[in-house]
Image (cartoon, rainbow, N blue to C red; front, side):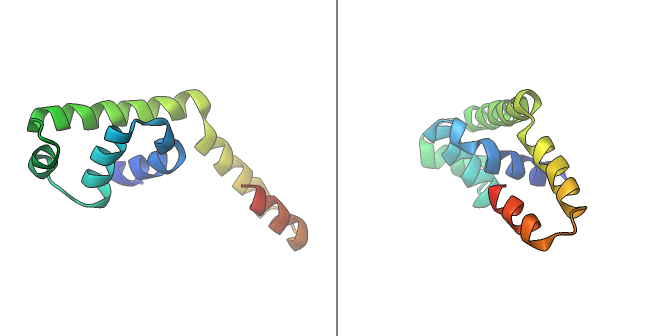
Length: 97
């Protein structure tokens, strides 16, 4: 998995723990494909401030997963789930994830 894909996955799980401004920067950069310059213009800040903010966000998201390990646990559960033969039980467990 490339680093952008990994960060987007981390954002899917932990994005709600970020501030509104951090969400805007992240979404503009990773989802809307804006450049650092475009984001800085839109938010009236320097390009280096946006770059620093994005680095802080990446560190924060990575730190959340290192401490909480929700993604790691979900992957382990999915592996076990694939071993279950009972499709009804499998569907019920899948709904919980």
